[in-house]
Figure 1 (cartoon, protein in one colour):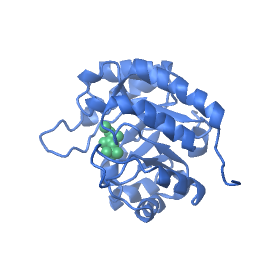
Figure 2 (figure 1 turned 30 degrees about the horizontal axis):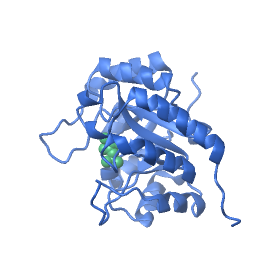
Figure 3 (figure 1 turned 90 degrees about the vertical axis):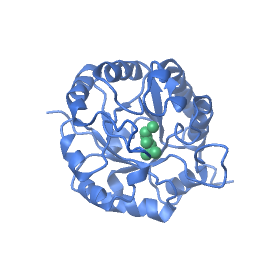
Figure 4 (figure 1 turned 60 degrees about the horizontal axis):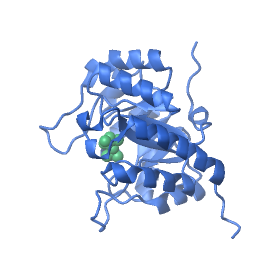
Length: 258
Ligand code: PEP
Ligand code: MN
């Protein structure tokens, strides 16, 4: 029997790097991206079948029909797959394929979803809500059970309007140092543009984040959702190497004695 993937096992990857498209759009797309993400040395693939979108007429994801593609993706790459669910029902639909559950920013306070995840055993990546306070974020983690959660800082709304969101690096430090919670950073959604992703990725590693989740595609212009912030798999490969090299220098930074 396959060994079950626990949060601790996942976090043995230092730094933990997850890559993949914003959304799964076809079998060919996810299989090719998955292969390239694996070859880059990443540890898990993001493969979202459902997308929470601002407007109802935007692409909503391929949904359940993508489940067999994800099965094939896992067989071909051997890497764990991270999948976002927006409802308790969707958790059941991906029962056999999702190795890591994922709560998106817009669902951080979807309490029925969080309660459903509590009755599961898989690790959960919990994104911070668009304007969630630390208390609300940790409260959401408590619904699932803090010991299975990896927090994900993805940027919050502030008065700074030069970019979509502001990455809250203070919060990354606070959850790590004051609450002893693992936290990864999503450098893709806050700038909303791909040229900034490398800088924010390295800043996160320098700070001591436990990992990164980065949107990548072999041809970002083909991506149906969030293409402007999607880096090519070529750039992703360089980023994985740079993140590992930087981690070797900074390890887990501890300035507490200063
Ligand atoms: C995503 O990861 O594609 C996404 C929609 O992120 P968030 O939930 O942080 O907006
Ligand atoms: Mn996205």
